[in-house]
Image (cartoon, rainbow, N blue to C red; front, top):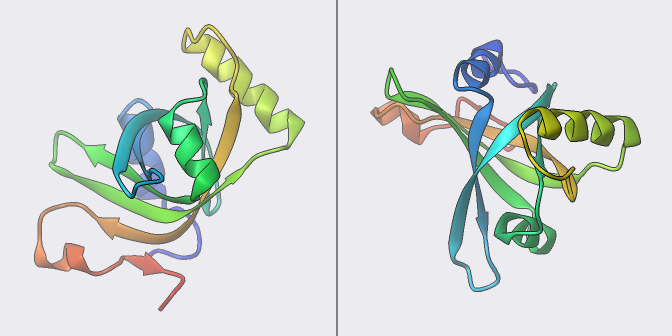
Length: 140
């Protein structure tokens, strides 16, 4: 059962998939945008990721912080969708850790922003009737 934190099953899947998730945002015209990001940390009910460049994801989150992150289990055709609000991280220690991780991943610069997705709903993306209902929601 999912509580108000990210379940171990999701954390293990993120690690299994190389810490890569797909981040979905919406632009000023209402057009969706998706982009892969490396998960820098998982903190209770938050997924931390960084923007190495001022790109569409960065601009979209600044304008409208509603974000969806997909963690895809490619082998088992499943995974999870985590929905919530992104907030910019200002903690210098966490930003420093993200800078180190980006350098390890061969990015040529540190983050221009570090974001925490505060997870408010979790859905399974494994094709089934039950994937229509949230596994966890702060709204219900």
